[in-house]
Image (cartoon, rainbow, N blue to C red; front, side, top):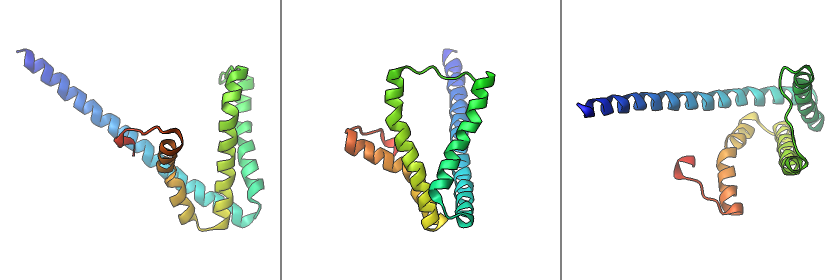
Length: 143
């Protein structure tokens, strides 16, 4: 019967949906776990060297040491950015740098647990700011 084939496809889709949900959930769990480790590492570094601006700068510079050799050796293709692309990305990069420095300073100023709670709430705050500043309300599932 024709309904038997449709039921099999529907059953296969539901299995695929479950796999996708578990995969996405595992990514969130890993992000959260690595974020905890990152926060603890930063706090230890700040306890050893009480210069949060220096530590934040070293962390950002470490990224350059990671991707530049990959680009120069051709192991990873360097992005081709136009002047318009750079104009678009510059404010975003500046804000990201500010948030990173602020997070490192906050970790040095208080408890790791509080900083972790604040950082974990970033997606919710971003959605709220998106609604307030841009008037863009995302679907309920996002919140």
